[in-house]
Length: 427
Ligand code: LLP
Image (cartoon, rainbow, N blue to C red; front, side):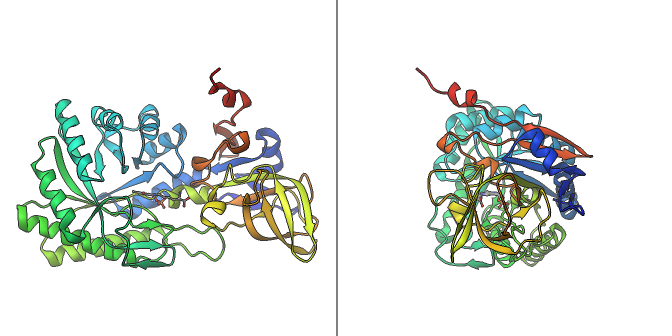
């Protein structure tokens, strides 16, 4: 987040607000999200890609009504992948034509709602779904704009990409073996569909642009084949999301401008050499927009020093508000933010309060040796896939999300209550 500062006493402020006062007002654990930073990132992506491209924010990273309103105001589009995300988007006023519906197993009900609402596109993930969407659209007297999601034979993770063994997964239709070409053939014949483009998403937390370049090249190759076979130039390419952010100081993320230049450069070059009109490009960043804009604030409860090993610092949340460490071995950093300390750094592990030993928030961190109950710790870069993947494990109450802007803090998602938990129990 861009407005986090540490004053002379070691107390951290966000948007000018003291974290101790924030903890007092909103309780811990809580996520604090810098609204200006979020909006600035939206604008940076939008400006980098320019008027001839669309930026779809991937709602799975984190979605709430406030987020939808901000996206709307900043001119971004929205990628949703469930009925719940679609309902949130429409309910908070995102125009349907700026929404894309994703998913490998969309229900008839989800498809019907999306088509009836008039979403701008549905990204088709299988042959069966293609027929389903076409029938539903026809029944509703509509022609639904769709893209076909293809798997390009590239799987990218962080610092590398693998060009083999990637088709063995549940998403999309393979370019290999002519599957995607066959999907285009069938889609063009279905009256309920208007096929507008090809979609590819290659992975998550990617820093190296090489995987995107291979993906873009292969998608353009398919567009050229479609032109040769059908005499149709599909007008859109979506290259998905997956751009990496800095979780720790070891990560070195690309800026939106650099990403935009690389992606549009390669698409333009490949289209020119294939004699194709350059299609409208779109991307779907989730993490890269919201990830860096929030941190989680925890209070230390107990500290246990294991001689010769490390110190376990237990906080009042854990895997219920950040599953990523346990699930992906994700790396985070942590800082003492409620005071300064001159104590020696000690090798620490920040753990939660859940009933299992894998409940780790930050696996290895150096914290001052005098960290004590009541201290506040902040874990940065928790804006993406933390609140959205939060659970009620051990009947934890999912934390609030507090937006900070212009020296003011306000709830955009309130903390759950025990009543919320009990409300679902029947009998
Ligand atoms: N577009 C599609 C089709 C996707 O499947 C995804 C993410 C995105 C866009 C956005 O990707 P992003 O820019 O946020 O990396 N829960 C995992 C990440 C799973 C992402 C799934 N799809 C995590 O916590 O890292």
